[in-house]
Length: 587
Image (cartoon, rainbow, N blue to C red; front, side, top):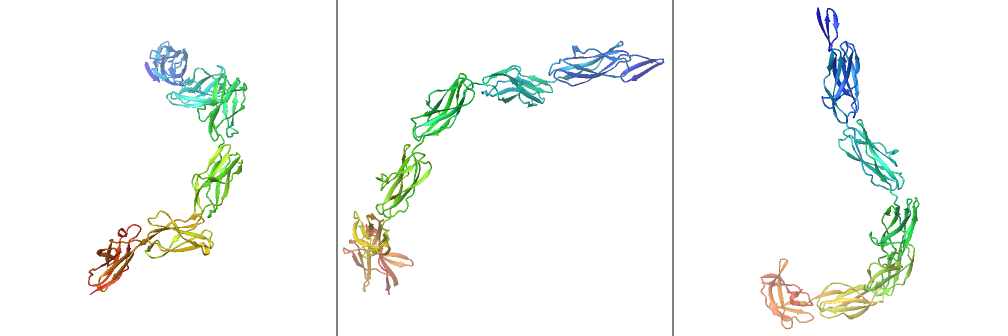
């Protein structure tokens, strides 16, 4: 009897109760632990009851081309799991593979499968930058190829390196990126080898070897200039020769172009910083100078940073306000700073900016810092404006303070009113600054059209220094008062012509105009009050004696009238004017 039994992938044929062996079967499994040049492939084999061997074919195409060593799968009838490690693969390449099983009855091939090896990071060593005497910056690029990647630099005085930087992350990007790490504590003037190393789960990449040489050029550090005087200064700094015979000097001038330099000096050939200094002369007082230290040896020339100093100049001065100003005295004030130089000071003063007078010279010493100075003035003219300024002088030069002014006190002058009718009187009054009685005050006047003031009276002050004087101006007149050769300000008084208005019994009006000169042929206006306004009802011309008689028709009833004389008719030196008002009744 023929019995066929299917069990898994193995077929057994039973003849009369006896089983006969069959060909093996092979199943290709997944690839695991894939690296850049290695991978592990899996699968299974069923020997089919006969001694069976297996191997894996692999390659970059379905032609394969490579295979693993043959391995024994036994002679059982159960499934046997198999694993094979592949090596010496190409990074980033796609491989085909399959499991192959063989026994005496035949050969079985598993299906084709593929895997792709990983791509390790890219690492390229760049050039070192920022090379100093004991430090440098190492540069390179890393391409993570989309894998989490770290990197570091190896460096040392040979290709054995011996020192490496801390491990840093390069991320997991898909493109190259620049990396830089600063290293320090290097040896001066030494050649160093270095390279970049990048690592990910796809492997480690090492950049090519590169070199740099630390500088052995000197180090120059410019320090403050001290001391600094009017025309001299001492320039200072530090030089480190770094083991080579080194010279140094200072460049200086009024700009960063310098233009001047000191003599060259030796700094030796040591390896430690050495303080250096040099004095310079023939400078300009109160001038700012740039300077820097320069050092040079066989490895090169270096420049210290630019620094600035200002030579001592003239003292600083500020003219202050005048105080305690009287009729003939004042106290001048100000402040100054000697800038540490022996200084004298004084005040220029006078009635113009040419001054012409000065106070006594006094010493301000040489202590730096602001100090206040004062000087009294006497024998000044009353009611006079004076200019003054503080002046200070040292070996750094002479400095002038701003021009200021003050006015001495003098006699005052006021008027009771600024206008008066011709023939009327007005009172002038004022006070002398001593506020004492018996002080002589001279009154001056200048009438309209005259060229200058003339004395008209001398009066004595009364209690509290008050003086008065009555004047009767005949035309516009200006007045001044003088005391102790000082003049008050001028005040002007305007004069109205005196206008008379009379009504005779016959109804005629009579007008006369009086002043310092006749007003013949000038026109006057008869005005009637209408409500709150004055309305001109008649114009008449004055006669030779500045008078006129005329008739005027008024409305019936009561009227209030006056005569007006305009400023244009009154002429130069007079104000316009009006007469008194009359009340007239017409029946």
